[in-house]
Length: 228
Image (tube, rainbow, N blue to C red):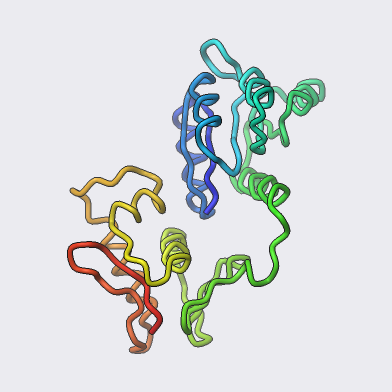
């Protein structure tokens, strides 16, 4: 699952971007100023960075970009800006940006551009890299479709993310904290039952027509996906 750094001082916009990325099967981390963006990008591996050009504080977006490229950070960067003139776009790209999207923008286009940046950086996947299988359960990562014994399973975006996570770790016990932090992207709060609710819904969808259960509850630990 791709991890994206969002550098945006407008909280509302950042939340909307984060929600769009989650719906697209991506995790995200959000920072609001340039200095923190540089620290995060240097210390954590991200698949892409969404960088607002106009940031408060000592570093604007282009200065953040220059600082990252100057220290060898090669993570693909999508620049967001209300400045739409050709000279502004060219300056952003020449500073080290990989793509430039002007505000206001469509979130579908934003996620498509992030996808394209990640694909350019990664080696072209073979067919085997675009499909996960555990027993008679299959997940087509290209079409974002799941099926069991040839029967397609209708999944909500979060259920798809959850299933993909389980299928990448078949047989491994996944604690609630691990699931929450790796799928939801937040620190786990043991006062919430959101993990149990989503796992229960996913389990019912996988066990269609009375097929053997594939998600087991490991008492006192969490859950694991098994080959039925």
